Amino acid sequence: MAGGSTTGASAASSLEPGAVDRTSLDLRATYHVRATIGWANRQLAVETRIDLLNESGGPIDHIVLNTVAGPLGRLRGLSVDVDGRSVPATLADQTIRVPFGGVLPDGGTVEVVVRYRATVRSDLAGPSGSAWLFTRTTGILDLYRWIPWLSREHPFARPNHGDPFVTAVSPRVTLDLRADRPLRYAVNGRRITTSDGGRRQVFVAEHVRDVVLTAAPDFRTARGRVGDTEIEVVARPGAPAAALLREARRALERLERLLGPYPYPKLVVAESAGGYALEGPGIVWVPRGVATSRLPYLVTHELGHQWFYGLVGNDQAAEPFADEAITDMVTRYVLGMRRAPRCTSGRLDRSIYTYSAACYYERIYVAGGNLLDDLRRRMGNAAFFGALRTYIDDHRFGLGSTADLVETLDAATPIDVRAFMGRLLPSLRPGAS
Ligand SMILES: [Zn+2]
Image (cartoon, rainbow, N blue to C red):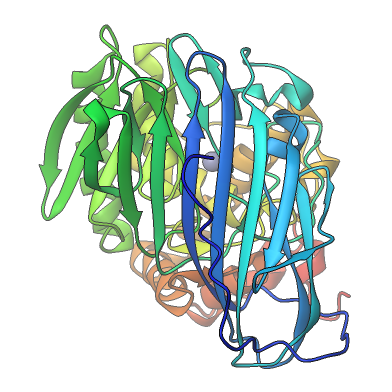
């Protein structure tokens, strides 16, 4: 790390003696991240100060953070301070468990500082086929889920490309990035300052459940606008920037008509090094080299996640139906792309860890989307999309779930939605445990 420590010795700690073996996601967490990025040597050093306010209604004595730097970046040099005192934090897989060494009562505040070093990969596949989340290759740096973020303990490895994450919204994140050369960033924050010839840049993001970035020395930016939303397409020379901008504009207009206003001031369409297209809050990753014919689907799907993931989060590892099925249904509806699944039908209410690579997409996205689309046909568009807007309003910047979604749909129609969806979502049947 460059510079001195950001750990301020707290005048008065809220921590009380004892232990309760309890944590929560209902914490107000602001993040101040200082990172040193070695473009040439792929070294990353990250210091994250998390100011926490316990809003969970009860005492907690630890938090659970996650970062893919664990499984993908050979994370090392982990050190964690709580209110200025070093604590024995542990890293397992993508999970950093931070014991406070005391109890934080409801309404109490604590300052957690997490430091780590890691090496970003130089390939796209790597462990669990996931290197593309944390790599520098094809002239682009990809950093996804790299800030140690308030989360739950979920295994990183899964048999498919599912998202093994759940993240709570932060009211404010500050990024202070220093690199060994001038870089251009595609990041879901607004730039506050740039100095040292572009080697140091500071960004701020608000109401986001993650801050993700791609970077390259030769990124170019194309700009557009839909209503009061600024669109930035950030990509290397030779990328289909005009097509990306056109698809982003078209998708934003169509989705806002169905789902209500896009939740962020800016939409960034970022070229990533490769792998899969992926959503972040206010940002979508489109992998380098993807066929132009796939852009309408990929851009619309990742933009759909701005409502189902960004605005209404969910436990993506435990309940992929709640983000992927509804997002894919809306995507195929606006594009007229409904098709039959290429795997036999089966339960849709399981975690990402139970579906094969061959059938995860076909089951959750395609069959799950078709189930919701069948319900739309029965309910009618006004009732169905009205219920989606209610679900979005009810869980705005919080966490929803498959059960919450089904309950909201059920309340909007005389149709028995639990019975209608019960064959594929049996855990939601009345009386099911
Ligand atoms: Zn998706």
